[in-house]
Length: 117
Image 1: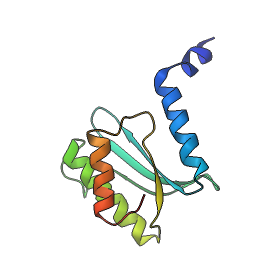
Image 2 (image 1 turned 180 degrees about the horizontal axis):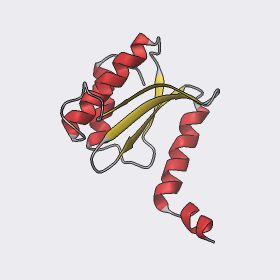
Image 3 (image 1 turned 90 degrees about the horizontal axis):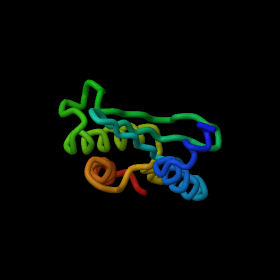
């Protein structure tokens, strides 16, 4: 019973809808998560089920935390790590979060650093 209630949750439905469209593209997926204090990003290969590159606002190189400037720094950091690993083109998976604020700042930071999506 609790599982049905969970599946009817609006956030879960949004995340599932976005993720299905991104996976259908067949590209690597730049998945993000934002909590109240931090921002996390990872590039996932869905074919193999592995995380190739990850970055978060808790990394030592990101000094600003989980605010908008921190999210932009995380975007730049994930793009740098992706380019070092030879990854240039990804699909942006915003999950259940609206493309606004910290999510938008992370995406713009990654684009500015050379990641294409």
